[in-house]
Length: 514
Image 1: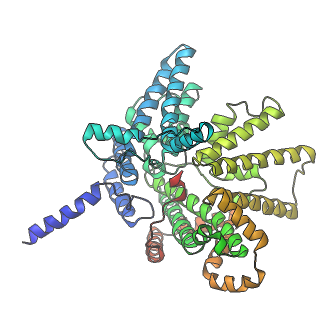
Image 2: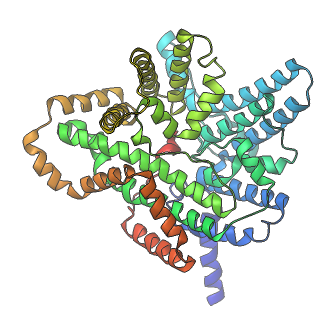
Image 3: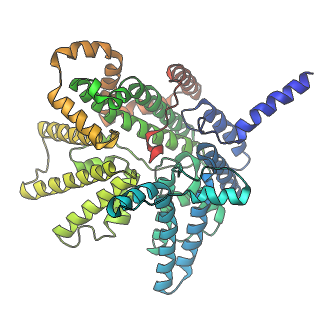
């Protein structure tokens, strides 16, 4: 009797373990992800000394992770992998420039075609209808073909954005382009390349890793010192604090409420929500990449830094050197420089900046507000460069000038986040008008008291962000030097505390939507 009940109980859990459930994706903030990670690391001990075996093992694990995070869209990931593995090899072995260019263009067409279809189909259809007056019907061809081949019943009337497609598409494209430019040689082993593109810690939200940075690590021996393990645990803890304690808390209890109904809140509340969102999106996205870098380090792989205290930036150029570094550097190297960069005069440089920022905005989503957001950042960069050419540049800024520069840059960036976050341009306009014309100074003390815990958390978050880098390096170094048992106990205690305060409402990472 006990045996039958045990089997029935196991069979009831079996579908959940091996099937994709949209409401239970395998994400860093879910407790069962860490169980999954412990099991993966446990069996990793059988493969880590064998380079090919390690690549195959982690490729399979990454496919499973992607399936649990995004469903059957892992087939698109495989298409990108096969396309660029073949294209890279053919580009390298072809002697004629026209043939090499053909395979490069083929790679771009497949990758960008998939990205455009799944991310911009509705945007293109709506734009076509607006311009011509004729409706354009959109059909989920992948679901249609899958239904015909397998007899499944996927909805063909709606196109769902695959998780991480914006990230792994750009990563895969960079490989083929770098082979074409002669910067790297193609990967001979298919599984090494497949592992590079699909490595699960950074697969769905970056950082976007270049082949020149990652592939040498694939061929290197596994190495993880006690200090590196401590660094990995610190990054994971730091990321969980940013995401679970700061970002999710201020989003659920304040920011989302205001953005959902700006007219129902005073101008002061709208302004505080905007400051809150500026911190929320930073803690959410940088928290993910901290955890991704930490998890990757446990497997012996070092991912590039993706954020460097962006709200300490002294101008917009500096901001984009600090924010989403892997994307901004990708856009610079593969788009801005390809368009001519600053080599063809001031007018052409201005055009290239605007084109890069507009496309960078479009990368974030198929919506006019993202294009406007990118365009305004481009305009800000042009104004900055114009002012720099007019006024002499001081070799060394004093403390006051530095403070003013950081203050202005932070508020420009924060104001532009309003367009990025608002549900629509109309909603963004309403919030802006609320701040200007309905501030209600007399209600400020009452509002501060009512939201005192959230507002204190926002202040603490910003204070930590603006701490001197040397102080941050100091307390990170202190943690790394502690005995492993102390580090483990602190990690477990923090883990327990965070999951006690964690909201039961599912909070996906913001950049999963892009």
